[in-house]
Image 1 (cartoon, rainbow, N blue to C red):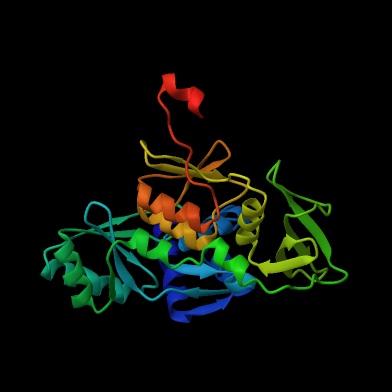
Image 2: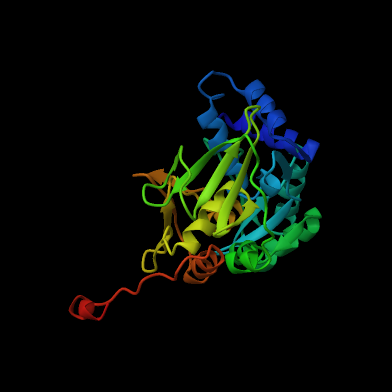
Length: 306
């Protein structure tokens, strides 16, 4: 995706405010210059980038709607500010002028899978003044603020209301061993029901005869929690958090992890990798996802204690 088309799409999303997935697909296709850029893979990468970098959220409540977040400047580690949410060229110019008045530098970096990344460089006080001068919300410690907004898995299970599976829809199960969706009905896992007309709904079995409906990624992590399957890995020394590419983090948690480095997850070796994730953010993300805490790193001569 070119810088101009990425910015044009974000500007369009910001103008619309919200809409359907079908409308997003049409807008993405119209802005691409080649068939490859308009492919389903490119579209899903774009969707992940827009979500992880806190511009918009998709498939709200497990449905087919999207909406743009209100513009804000969030403080990242090392006194870096990130312009998140919806934006237009007019707002970007406004932020640039405010940053100049408040003695902040503005760095605009091209992203191959989405709109440009706009970063502010200055003291915490200068970044906060820039947000106030530009008339946008200021969010101190953006990664922890995003993580704190997530409803933990345990709370979801406590308030879970039973739901009925659709009749005459095809069903797939998420195999927690192979981490793939399979065309069979497995016990105590996540399920995807699909209508012959296209709509999909996702559930997780929380008891022998009880289903709970939620969005796709959340269903996988709920199933992993109930079956005590570890999906998230964390290296505290390197401050790297990893998840399987076939089991990406629920969107809200992915935003918190990505905010630590101000970049979306890096793909490689079948894994999604988030860098610069502090122990505090990793702990909140793992707890909210219903995952066990990181395994301790014993010294070589202490391995018998594991």
